[in-house]
Length: 144
Image (cartoon, rainbow, N blue to C red; front, side, top):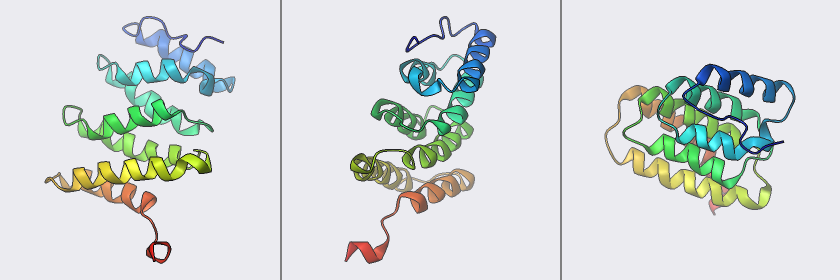
C-alpha cells in the first residue's frame, strides 16, 4: 500500500473515489501522509472537508496528522466551517492517541484553544471552540 495513493489533487473526483475505496477496505490509516497532503492542499474545499470527516475513524492517528488538523483549526485564512469540522475531528482523533501521547496532544490543543479564545470569534465558532475545550479540559479534581 502506498502512503500517498491520491495522485493529482486537482482531479478531485478520482481522489474522492480512492478515499472511499480506502475507507471501504479499512486501509485509510496506512495512507496518513497522503491524507496530510490533502489537508494542506487549499485548492479544493470538498477534498479537505471529506478528509477531515473521514480521518475521525483512524485508530492510530500520527502526530503529523493531528498537528495538521490543529493547523486548520487555527488558520484565520481558512473558512469557519472547515475550522469547525477540524475541531470536531480533533476531538475524535484525541480519543485514539496512545495513552503516553495523550497529555502532550491535549496540552497542544488547550494552548490552541486559549489562543483562539483570546481574540473575538463569531458565536458559532466560539461554540465549537467551547466543545473542543470541554473535550480536552483537565477535570479540576485531577488538578489538585
